[in-house]
Image (cartoon, rainbow, N blue to C red; front, side, top):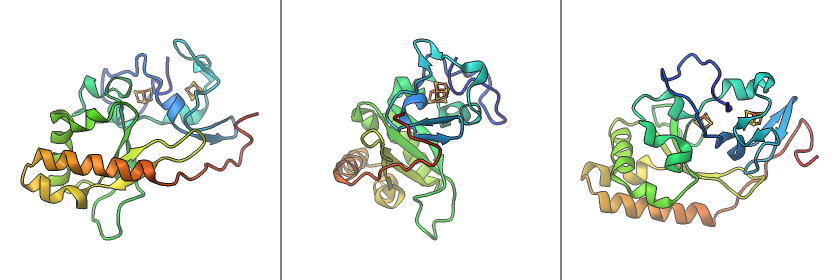
Length: 194
Ligand code: SF4
Ligand code: SF4
């Protein structure tokens, strides 16, 4: 059992986390009952998932990635298979952009996934519909990742259905993100290393 196999009001029917435990590693947690660094496996993660599943913290019961919530993402989008974690994010969208939240695509695997027809086609549809799109990468352990707003970058190439230009823009954006600074995560509920 993993972090996201409990109930949820907007979950896709008959979709389970299975062997995926990506979110038990990727995200920082700063809660009274669990403190962990980003990019480090939770100490409760076992070989088959969460070792404390019946009594796991509420944050683990309540949080679900986009793959668990968006029926248009097929099984290939499960984060441990696709190398991309989709999450909803209210921050990072420019003021004045009408829609919220953004769909944030966090690349945790091979960047070539970003250059596939499946990914480009899905993102093009979002950009067409003016759904905000963020491309993100994790930082080193203990930091927040970095992200970039993609709609303004991609609108012209999406309008022309120019996949080559979309790929170039995604690759350039990745390079910029990787070269940036990563902010350290602060904790208020204890030392994650303790
Ligand atoms: S307690 Fe740790 S291993 Fe269990 S669901 Fe939460 S983050 Fe994952
Ligand atoms: S990343 Fe998504 S699919 Fe994977 S364990 Fe977390 S909620 Fe489940």
